[in-house]
Length: 280
Image (cartoon, rainbow, N blue to C red; front, side, top):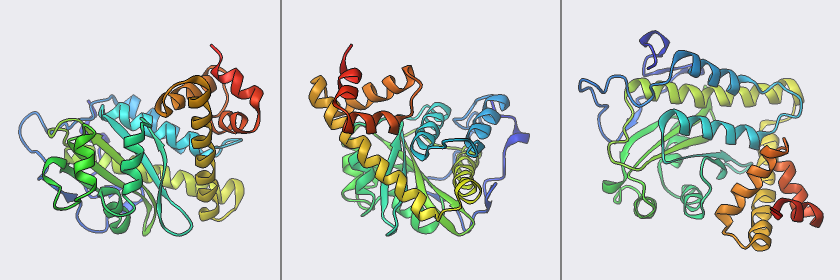
């Protein structure tokens, strides 16, 4: 359980004071037993995750791998059914960049949020949107909410990736039950993680490359296209679904200590690499 001394007030994050109230679909639960929230990891575990997120000033830093790491850590912290990240492209449109689960329907949910959904609200306002009961959110999001419920999700939370007034993307957390609610301490920690990731990206850009943030993020979105192409190639060659193809690519990269984008590029450009990935 996270000690009280390690938590920030509900309106504070490392990036600064939240500009306005957090948007809650339901009030934060104050009943006995709920004060601790859903995040119950040790101080040491939480500190390790923050160090991982801050570690962007390394050789061959890769945005895609970094984002996948963050979604997996958040999924582990919250035991969420799925966690995904969207980044804004050069035109300010949110694009899916990484997820703890990459099934087709989930990706469709993220893409849909360019038109409606919690991520779009968090991105526009710069404030978290938390504890939304999807079963009663159809009037609010007539396309997004029914699709999310049909996909097995009952609760959703969205956290802006921001530094002061600059918002570069969002972190989306899906729960499988309506009771998948965050207490105030959970919200502060998750928003802090999202803010820390944003600071890490900005710092890496400023110190290591000196390139415009929009160009860096656009490069990540271009890498995402390569990953989608590689998923299609592996799915066709391996005779598996596109969802399972991503798992094949990711596992191959981990076994051979290669970055996800590197493996995906090799699959798309080199038939030999494709055979190596799909062969048992």
